Length: 60
Image (tube, rainbow, N blue to C red):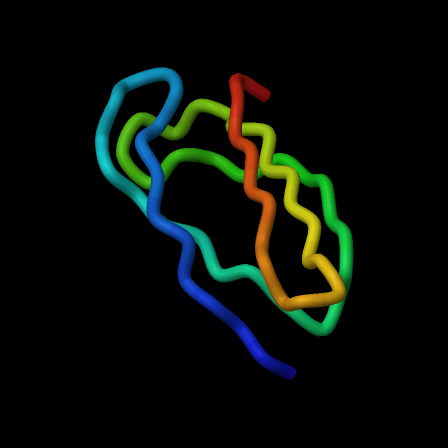
């Protein structure tokens, strides 16, 4: 299982945080709580055939 760490800013508090993406799954969508403010963040990503990652985060 290949994982990659994705860094982004929380859409609620603006703090820089990260999540681990499992690249063995080509598409995932889930809710993760911010490590700082504990508010829900919607995480969505796709891994293309070329290995490029499309990542989106938003208020959950």
